[in-house]
Image (cartoon, rainbow, N blue to C red):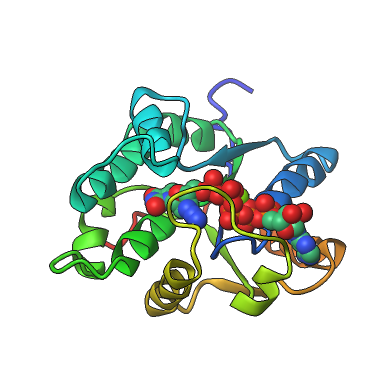
Length: 215
Ligand code: Z5A
Ligand code: MG
């Protein structure tokens, strides 16, 4: 009808340490939502397709070097450059299922233990970005993660780094996160994930406001 404003989509995020199943669950969730008539898109960070994303990709594959502070800001800028599009999509009713976001950004930089680059410093450039309506933190022990095969080739894929990353995720954890036991069959996890996502979709349809990170 004329003048009718579309109900907004939900911003649903997956976070967690290496190999906890974020990409697997995010991909499946988009299909499950679509099959139920919920318009949904898969997003991921870093978005390696943009000019900044290409620099990040080079860095992650150790094809280039960068100061820790500089690469942190580049990861954050890679989110800021997609902010307007993200907001437009959500406003037009599309649910965004996102694979990593600012929480990974802060967890990884803080995990480096570089003097001055503590969690507070890490959060600053992320403040004001859209805050997810649901954050599913997939929890998996380092031992169980190790059973899912060896590390990849990228920069942060070492045991020491992953241990520190888990610790910074724990330090950032907030009450509203959904903590999910990721050491189960993918189908079982997906059932829980779908329930959480549908509840977020419902709340957004009913007018839930999009919040901002760390404000
Ligand atoms: N990074 C950063 O520093 N700053 C930032 O701001 C951002 C990111 C956004 C990007 O990696 C890197 O950038 C990352 C953080 C940093 N560095 N590290 N490490 P990425 O996101 O591209 O990483 P990835 O290659 O997608 O891996 P991943 O995310 O660690 O994995 P995952 O997505 O969580 O898991 P998966 O690919 O779905 O599954 C892993 C394997 O386990 C696979 O063989 C699956 O078949 C298997 N699997 C999945 N689920 C299960 C269950 N339930 N049971 C058994 N096996 C399973
Ligand atoms: Mg992944």
